[in-house]
Image (tube, rainbow over all chains, first blue to last red; front, side, top):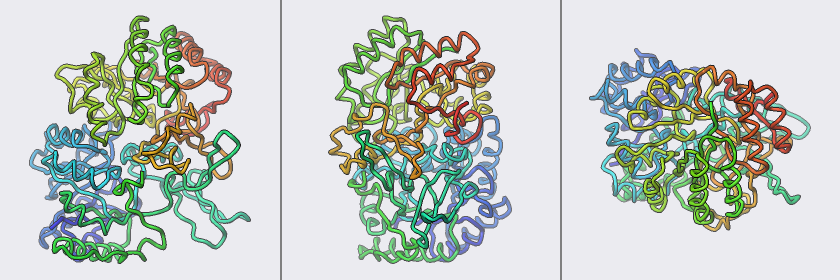
Length: 331
Length: 294
C-alpha cells in the first residue's frame, strides 16, 4: 500500500492525523527552519519528542520538515533542528538546502534524509544526483510533472518518490519562487512564509471587496461575495498586449486547490511510494476528515477498487479544484 | 568589481541576437554568459547565433560561459543539458540537473536561480568545482556580505544581481501561451512578440510583474545602482547586468563608469538611457523587492 503522509501543524493535529489513519505525519519546529512558519503552529523540542513517541506507539512515522534555506551566518539554528530531530527519534528529516543536506549527511548519518519539494528536483538526473551526493532516500516531487513523466522518472531512479495529492497548490516550481518577497520582503525560502497574513489587508469599497498583499491589489470581488486569500499566483491582474488590447483575469492560476484523488491508482502504477497532503496550517477537523478519506482511497487503490471522487468537495470551501500539472493540458 | 552580462532571458530574432552580441563585444564587460535558460523550445530558433557570438566575445577578450536550462523535465531537455559540456566553455548551471553530467574537473559557474543562501551551500558547491556564483536576487545585503567573505576564503567569485528584470519564478506552465489562449505545445512562440516580456499590472493599473514565457519577473527593473559602494565594501566581485532591449551597450558603459567612480548619478543616467523602465531596489535593503529605487 502507498504510504499516506499527513500534515501536523500542532501536537493535537499530529494525534488527530495518526488516529485518522496516517501512515506518517510531517511537522516542523516552531521557528524559521520550516516552510510553515506561522504564528501558533509547530512544535517545541519537548512536543516533538512526545509526538514521535505517540506516533511510534501507534505504528506511524514522523518526518520533520527543515525545508527553508538557512540564513547566511546563522546556520546554527538549522543545524540544531537536524540534531534535535534525530534526538527526538524522528524517522526522517525533509531538507531542501544543499549545505544542510551535506551537514545532515555528516552530522547525523543514521537519520534518513528526504528531499523536500522545495529543492524542485524535476527529473531523473537531478534526483540521482541528490541520491548519490547526499544519500537521499526519498524525493518529494515538484508540482511541475505529469503522471507519465513521474512514471518515466521512477524507471530511472532507485530512491522513493512522494507526490502531493491534496491541498494548496504551488503554480511555480517550489523553492524557486520569490513572488512573495518581491511583494512583502518575506519569502518561503528565507522566512518560511508565502504571501504572509501579516501583510494582508481587506477593504470594502464601492467597487467591491479588495484583498491586498503588501498594499498590492491581488483580488477585487463583488461586495458580499467571498474574498479569496490574496496569494499572488492566484490573483487577478491585467496585461496590456501592446496593441491596445488587454487580458484581465487570473493570469497565473485561478484560486483553486489540488485534488488528485482520482489519479491515485495511476500514481500507484507510476511507482509513487507515498502520497502527501498539504495543510499544516489547517484545523484538526479538516485534518481528520481529509486523512480518513485518503486512507480509504489508498486502501481502495491497493484493492483495485474505485476512488471516492469528490468526497472532499466541501473542504475546498466552495473553491474549484484541479489536478494541476499531473495532466499535461495544465501547461 | 567588474561586470558580467547574464544570459538573455527573452526570445529575440536571430539577427537581433547577432547585433546584440556584436555590440556587446565592444563594451567594457569582463565576461558574458550566453545560452537559453528559460524555455527549451526557443533554442532552435536562435542557436545559429550562439557560436558566432561566442567567437566574437572571446576575440574581444571576454570570458564566456554557456548557460544551462533553469527547469529541466523533458528527455530532450536532459540531453540539451548534457551536451553543454561538449562546447569547451565553462557551464553556468541554472539547475542542479547539470551537475549530474559534469565531467571531472570541468569548471562551472552558478546562476542566480540556483538557491545559494548560505556558506554551507557555497562551500559545498566550491568543493564540487564552482568558481563563480551569482547570488539569488532576493538576498539582503547582510547575507551578501557573509557570502562574499566566504567566497573569497574559498576562491569563489561572488556576483550580485546588478541590473535587469529579476527572475522571480519559473513554472511548467507557459503564461505567455495562456494569455493568448494557446496550449504550451502550440504556443507559436508568442513570447517573441514581447522582447522585454509582457507587463502584468494590478487591477488598479500599477505595473507589478512581467510574464516571459514560463518565467515570471518583476515589472520594475531591479537595480543595484544605489548600492554600489555597499556591495564593493562587502567584497562582491562582480555585478550582473541582464540583457534587455534598448541601448544596452550604453547601459554597460554607464555601469562601467559608475564602477570606476563612486556610482553617484548612475540611477539618473540609467533613467535617461532606458526611459521606459521603472526601477526597484528593495531586495538588497531587506525590503519588498518591488520597492521603488531612489
